Amino acid sequence: MRKSNRIIIGMLTILIFIISILGAVSTSIFELDFYTKTQEKYNVAENMQISQQEVTDATIVALLYTKGQASELTYILENNGASEDLYSEQDKVHMVDVKNLYLAMYYTFLALAITFFILIIILMFKRKQINVFSLTLIINKVSLYTLVLVGMIALFAFVNFDQFWVMFHKIFFRNDLWLMNPYKDALVNLFPEGLFMDLVFKIILRFIIIFASVNIGAFLYRAYSLKEVKQ
Image (tube, rainbow, N blue to C red; front, side, top):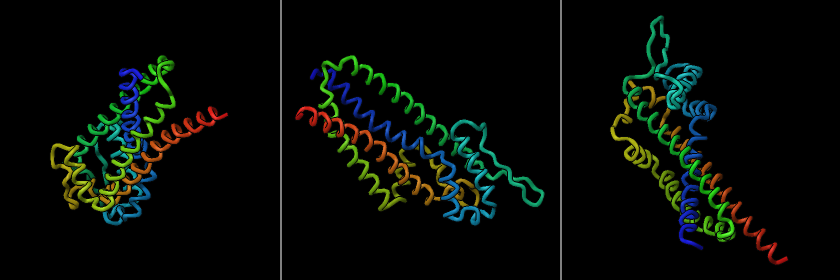
């Protein structure tokens, strides 16, 4: 196999891994039902002394702001005739970072998805030079290493989620605004650590399903090809 073809296949395999991760994240973090059920599980409304509907509405505002579909992070509560914004200034500033992180991830996902399809088209034009059987074998072999890596991350998160969560913030945020005061900042109460732990494992499970589907497809192709040869 030509070196250029090996490079394309290597890039394709890496893209499958990254796109699977970003796809799992982007399809998991905006599911309102998940937040509602998890917030009920952790008694968020009771702890914040507001109604479940207010918790849900405030969550919708935060999700829309993260997606760039709301111009500001504001949710007004009416309390004994007085109006008060649920979100503190630190909530608002931190969510600017969260929104920027999400949008960077989203546009990276789109760019990589486009690159992936371009590489697929290139491989289609080079199909006479490339053995599809070998291609699927390479995908499965490389995927084994990536699954081991994801497994190690999942184990770390399971054993010590606190440390995992701290490392995540130190890697992706350049300030300490994520360190919040539960007596002043709504975000830390609306989205307790237990909720994020459930979300992380949901993302990992979804990644495994997406990534496994690709690899099972590659394996079945080889099994079918071998069956055809034997006949």
